[in-house]
Image 1 (cartoon, rainbow, N blue to C red):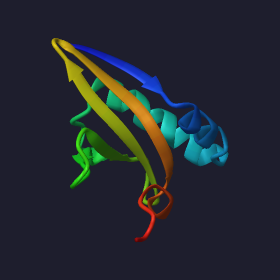
Image 2: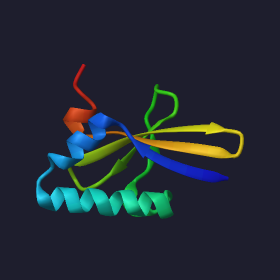
Image 3: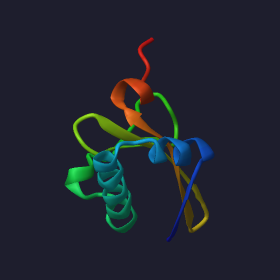
Length: 92
């Protein structure tokens, strides 16, 4: 299987707006996700009720939402949004 990675413009703006420490942690989490998506520190899990969307933890408060789609032997991983838990999962 070929895993590909891309990000949305919104994600690119959001990650650039993080404070330096959170930015470095986010980059480290993304690199780890790219090499080993099942690494326990990422807490990679499917978001209930939404097809193809998953979350990974950057730290206690920051989450990255990823859309994972497959086509044949290709898998596209789109870094969708990043922010605090309340920003990426707004209260209903």
